[in-house]
Amino acid sequence: MFSRYKKTGAATPKPANNAPAPAPEAKTEAAPATAAMRKPAKAPAEVVAQDKELKRRQRLEEVRSALHHRLLDNLNLGALENAPEADLKAEIVAICAEGLEEMSIVLNKDERQTLHAELFDEVTGLGPLEPLLKDETVNDILVNGPNRVFIERDGKLELTATRFKDEKHLLRIIDKIVSAVGRRVDESNPYVDARLKDGSRFNAMVPPIAVDGSLVSIRKFKKEKLGIDDLVKFGAFSEEMAAYLQAAVACRLNVIVSGGTGSGKTTTLNALSSFIDNSERILTIEDTAELQLQQVHVGRMESRPANVEGKGAVSQRDCLRNALRMRPDRIIVGETRGEEVIDMLQAMNTGHDGSMTTIHANSARDGVSRLENMIAMAGIEMPIKAVRAQISSAVNLIVQASRLQDGSRRMVSITEVTGMEGDVISMQEIFRYQRLGLQPDGKIIGRFTAAGVRSHYSDRFKQWGYDLPASIYEPAAAE
Ligand SMILES: Nc1ncnc2c1ncn2[C@@H]1O[C@H](COP(=O)(O)OP(=O)(O)OP(=O)(O)O)[C@@H](O)[C@H]1O
Ligand SMILES: [Mg+2]
Image (cartoon, rainbow, N blue to C red):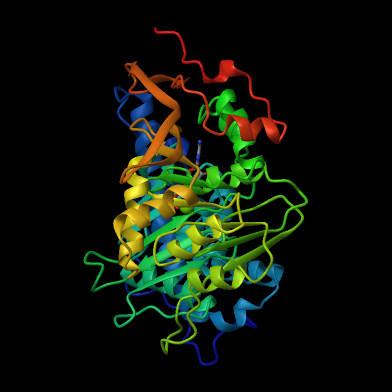
């Protein structure tokens, strides 16, 4: 076999140690019709079909694994990184053909194509994860060691049939991702954050800290972000709430989107940003750049952790401080989770109205406590009343996102911060999601309703030309 990418001095191809000999049924499988006929006549047709499919998959898996070993043993992966796609594909086809012949295995055209695609993914991409990355319906990919790969689809977690060959295989894929962004992950550096080429957010933790094998979490990047209309259509919030939010964002209220993990905070923040006027200068600051603003004048910043020597870190706080010198009209921080909170509140208080961020909290009230805690943990020594006064004058609106037990993501509450009463921050809920019951299939029955109070910012809305009808604040009739 001639190969431009062959390692120099590579041994003659031999089946890898653990490459199993083709299963005996492999050959009989080549004639599926006869195999099916040999089944006892009383076996139901679908059982036979299932059995056949299972065996076919097992066989493909074995062949794939054997060829994969062969490929890794014989290819110079370094050279392949820069090889033209067509060359690489041709190379893989050649190696496969040779390997299959040596193993005396006959595959049909479809099987061969699947095999070529899998091996191509293995060499150029993220191996077994590649089909999941390409699947538009998958939101998250979560790997718990080599044998358990979960995905999140429609708000629900599912176990997939995807497997890595072993922990070493999984580690090789992790290493490939992190070395591409100039990081390292090993025993002394056991966890890492990175962004994949397609923009997806990636986190990995390896043994011994990850006890049962490496843990990987990927939040898929969606090119087509959900817009306000999509969110209304999906039932994430109502038309009335959308109209209210449009007024709030356009009138430059400072907004915090609060929610649990994966509840749709970033998606909501991104959708809300569409209400910002095109003439404004917006600066975004994130740990992993996920936001996709549609305006013309957007400056995007991404913080950076320290390199392997522990140097070069640029925190969200550093970016935020610098952003204040960059004449922003609005600042958007992807997620406020630490010391940057104080600069964020100050920015909101000092002429950058209309700034937005997200926080991790389960309710508006909880969100305010989170802000207080973050301030305390940042080492700012201020009496609690002063802290609360700072929060209440900075934050105008808290939008609570939630992933409900049936997997649906909804904006369960929109709450205004109206000031201080004594030592307490006063708030009023304007809209909420009301649960009415449960369908037999587990889907939640519910509706959005106004809480029955007029917005504290009604006058401001009016002055800015957003004359919202009083009816949007009226609660839905009792069921
Ligand atoms: N209303 C919705 N309907 C359907 N899918 C949604 C909705 N909101 C968000 N999603 C999807 O859910 C996933 C998680 O959303 P998002 O990244 O906004 O969550 P998050 O709260 O920011 O998560 P994290 O806490 O990890 O930052 C995304 O893939 C997104 O496309
Ligand atoms: Mg997020």
